[in-house]
Image 1 (cartoon, helix red, strand yellow):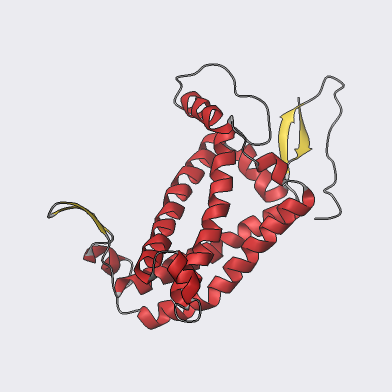
Image 2: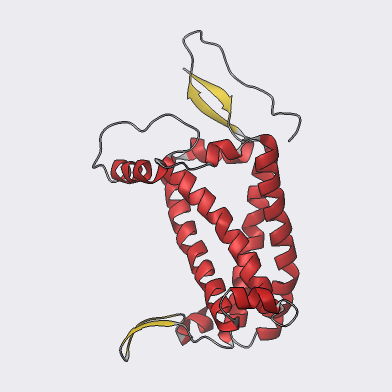
Length: 232
């Protein structure tokens, strides 16, 4: 037997899903801007190992000659992205959910054990909890990445008015590189996040849509369909 158990508050779910189209627009418009000047590559000596991004990439995604469009969307949606992120962090602290996400000094080694478990190299079950150690590191990290994107974005958006911020980040070119690196980080996080969602199955995905998940029925056989807190 299974029962419904509350997992995610309404505010957390709404802010999470609103962030999906916002981040998609930010990455798309950012690529339109990057097309105009795309110097970043990984090279050893004179041999290029990876170039971000080859010409065919822009052609396939129709990203060429869209600098003005990219700047318009990027500079408009960045405020929505920042406001949504601030709202998410504020609610996390106000509701006390930050305690579920907060890493501690044992989190890195526990995350290593999670990786071993996912690779079928560790048979011991993971400790019970709303989030495992790897999720705590990933979710806390992506929040910090969002803050980094806002800070570096402002530094390259207003390098004269915010010259002090641009200077602290190492200058305009350094801030632009940091902004780009964070975007690549979002891509890597998305691949890992979607992979974990697929691995966890429909029950986990449903909890982020409805707020509830199915768990084994308690010994008393009672259901646990709790209403969401009024604060959400």
